[in-house]
Length: 165
Length: 284
Image (cartoon, rainbow over all chains, first blue to last red; front, side, top):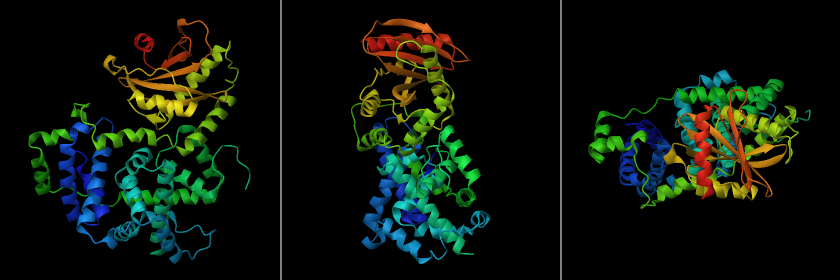
């Protein structure tokens, strides 16, 4: 079964739980199978991930309290960044090799802490490997928004990982 | 900071986004080169670039979820035996015209969405520079067609180097034509030749001597065919003329509305077949 690992990874990061991800992906696969006639060509993986994303949010809305589902926005990230923006703008920040060797648990925590639009964009790009175009189409936002969310999400992660030293 | 004439953003945050786009392989060859030059000249950009690349390395080390046997069985059970196949892209056999599900519509909107392609404008400005630099600027509406051919050829070569040869990705001419119309106020015929083995891949805007010109991209087996359509004001239609050179097959012809230039790296006979099919379909 192709793309199932990708589907699980996306659902896991959107729902925050590996066990829940299996339920979500199962539901998404049922929808995908039922809607297979609507598949109009193009990238089958992106198509499946779109369904997984929708199923994840449907699942969250049904199974989680509102505050957990609360959709983050740019201000959330500003608040997060403000907490540890103690280095001057000229500071080069953490060294690249520090980031590359980061503790995986710390990285997972940092990703989980990202506000949802940023986490979603980061996961679709860096874990699922979708192109900017595919992400823009899936999220229905301009490519410029994808680029800025990605830059800010990664900036937050780099900052978090650098702080953990 | 010294002034750059490479068309890249001056704003620091936007330049950072270009670094991310470079790491992600999202830049065409010309833009990537320009960004790499900036990185080489600017230690601050170089450090940021290294951090972004390092983060990719770290994220790639994250364990990938492996579907358990029990989970796979649950999924397999969904559609019976054919569910397994149904999700294989290579065996998705159908485009149903009857069901326009939400998914299909959202897929269609993909192409429209990719029209907002921020750095493409930047890339286009770089393309102008490249064409100016290569001396292919003598093109004019009358005469100078060899130089125009050279510009079309370099546009095609550039598109083969770029991450994506088209700016609007769609096999649907009802998507490609409106996109070009929206950009340029005109669009050439874009017949669907998939049944003849020439699938419409999408469209892009070529820039020749500062003039934006619509281009269509078709695929035949593994070969791309770029069809540039230069608008003209009336005039006599002309039959296909061979302009092949430098390992590329090129044919040009015209009708009353456009002068067409088709270029590809496949052999002439294949291109001739495309031209014949295209002219027949476009004449309808």
